[in-house]
Each structure stands twice: as structure tokens, then as C-alpha cells.
Image (cartoon, rainbow, N blue to C red; front, side, top):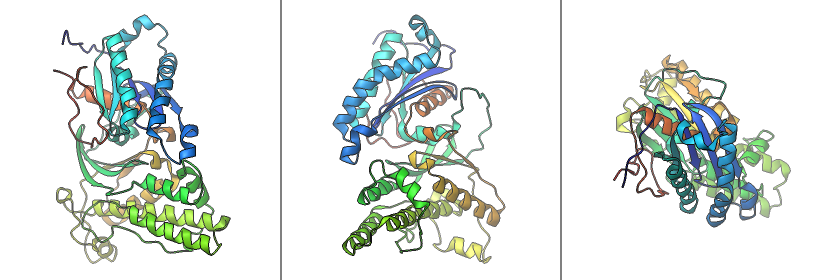
Length: 398
């Protein structure tokens, strides 16, 4: 395979993310974002009401070189001959994501790594979302001690997961959606209401004008003894209500706002219900909630709440940009503090743009991987569209 590239004592990482419909290239120094360039494909996919994989691949191929050049320029890399001396590694998302889209980023990362004689760091996209609250702006260089264990919540259009981070690089999934993700549910219901694509942000705006008490819709997964989520049944119930309103010619502008309010409320209520279960679980290793009515009994003063081992909560993913979700989680944490006297701080990406897919979080994850002393090198690298957090990443050392 030839001589292996060695890691110099440099902190800058260039990262690429083409996991879905945004082409992104970023350069970080430690956790500091020196540049983060994103080429959106929203206009391309609007007519389909969702991401069309073949078109996404073509757009990534058209955008990735320009995104890389812009990122290098913004980060102050003006002399191409010195780039390899200033970078520590090239990082790239290998999964999960759309296979054709992932392929573009991986191939381009291989090209850059070969040209600059740098190692490639494969990155798990979900892990990167979980770590996104650790990103820092270019003008800031602060370090804080992370108080492990941490509960990370990744709530996005593709994923809805509760992840226990025991220490840096040590992950355990506590719960996940068994069907649709929260963001996917919001987008699909938004399409039922003809709100356009992506529907989530429009739904959030309309919900502010709506009455969430006008109709009753079910709260799913409240009778199961685990931390998993499910939004498919809720989506079906909402679809039936929309069909009924259309048939009765009652789906006017206010009805759409009211539906937006109740849909958003119920989706976030299920997330917070499971969050509360996790916080009140006496033993996270059991991954079950021993009594369905435990939190109710605690609130009634009949029993004392278990003190969770979780010390921090990190929220990432596209839906994490939603103010209503953020406020609902703050409310849950505040209630837990009242009952247990334990405060759990909520950490979010420092800017909403880092909730969506971005390469900055990929570079950060690679930086933390390198910091732990884990080094991987270019060799056999391929896309992993169904990669789960905590799963072994491809070894590029053969």
C-alpha cells in the first residue's frame, strides 16, 4: 500500500458532507469554525416534495469543487502549495445517508487526500449531529469540561434518537424511532396540507397562529416499556382528519394553522414524554421504564424521583432549530429539576444553521477522533447508508 501518511502536530481539518441534499465543505481548527460552505439543493427537489437521490448526486458533483475552493479561501488558505502543510486530515461522512450522495463526498475526499498526502477520517453523520453543540465560532476559543455522562438527542428529518454518551467516543443508543423520524413526520403532514418543501419551517411558523386544542390527536408509544419513538400512526391519524376536513370543506386558512399547532405539539410531546422516561429511569442500563405511571406518582408526592446519572443534554439535528421544541425540552428539564433538585443544562449548536446538515460538525467529530488518538488512513473506504451510531467505522489501514 506504500508509505502511510503521518499526522503532524496541526489542528485544522477539512471536512466534506454529502449525506443528503446539501453539499457542504468546512474547515475547523479544533472546535472553531474557520469556514463552513453549504450549497443547498432545495430548489431542485421542491417539485418532487422530497429528495430525489439521482438528482442529489448530480448536484453534489456539480457543487463540491466550488464549495471546497470557497471554504479554503474563507479559512485563509490562499497558497495551494502550502495546504497540505496546514491541514491535519480530510474528514468525510460515510453514513448514514443516501448512497449515491455519500459516494460523491467519499470519492472527492479520496482525491484530496491523495493530492495533499493526508489521512482520511471517516465520520458517522449521526455522531456528528450529536456533537454539534460543541462547535464554536471563529472568534471564540473556549474550552469547558464536559460533565459526562451526557444525553444527546438527534432530532432531524432522517433520525430521531436518544444517545447516551458515557465518555468521548463511547455511545449507546437508548431509544430511536421505529418508523418515521420526527422531521419526516412534520414534512409529510406539511405536504398533506400543501405547504411546500421543506414543510417543517413553514409548519412551525403557522403553528404560532394556531389553536392546538381545536382537535384531539393521539400521543403514540406511551404504553410501551422502552424509550423508542413512533410517528407513523400519528401521521395516519392526522391524514384521516385532513381528509375529513377537506371533504367537509372546512380546511380553511385557520384550520391549517390549528392543525400545524396540534401536530407540532403532539410530535414534541412524544419526544418529551420519552425524555422524561429516561430522566426518571432508575437504571439506564436496563433501557426500560419500570412503571408507566412513575412520573405521575412522583408529581403527586407518592414516591421520590430517582436521580439520573445524566449531567448534560445536547440537542442536535434539523428539528433542533425549532423554537417550540427547544422550549418544550427546557420545560421538561425544569420540571425534572423541581422534582429531583438536579439541574441538567441544555446545550445547542451556537447557530441554527449548524442544526441542519453541515460539514463543520463532520470536521469537529474528526478532530475529537484524532484527539482520542484514533488514526485511520486511506485504503478501502466505502459508503454506509445504514450506519448506526457506535458501529465500527471502516478501517483504512490494510
